[in-house]
Amino acid sequence: MAEEMSLGKPPLELVLDFVRTLEAGGGAARIRPFLADGFVLVEAPHLLAPAGSTRTLEQVLAGADNSAGVVANQKFEIRRTTCEQGRVVLEADWSATSLMDLRYWDAGETIRARTSSVFEVRDGRIVSQDSYDCYYTS
Image (tube, rainbow, N blue to C red; front, side):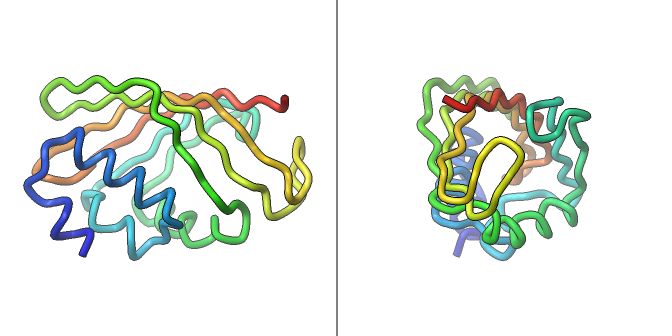
């Protein structure tokens, strides 16, 4: 279903559909149709990953399935979008409920971050995402 939805859509619409899929619980099978075979996710250093990270498609899909045991009720409040050809920039306030004790949050608490992501879309698929997340505890 998501595969049919993602094909042929304008880049901004594709990225927003991807975000809505994440909010709905995501999971590898649901997000895979949005992502190109060579997809790469680059996360700048942040509170939960001080060294940052670079993940391949396979790592992202494994993480998507594992995230169901870490967070629930993901919500992206879109603040602003910019789109130029195949590049989509998304600024959002993100929140989720922690399902386990983490360094700065206990299980049941709400995790919050201001996030900016730069997506590259080519041939109806997201080929990369560079994310800049600013987590906060209040």
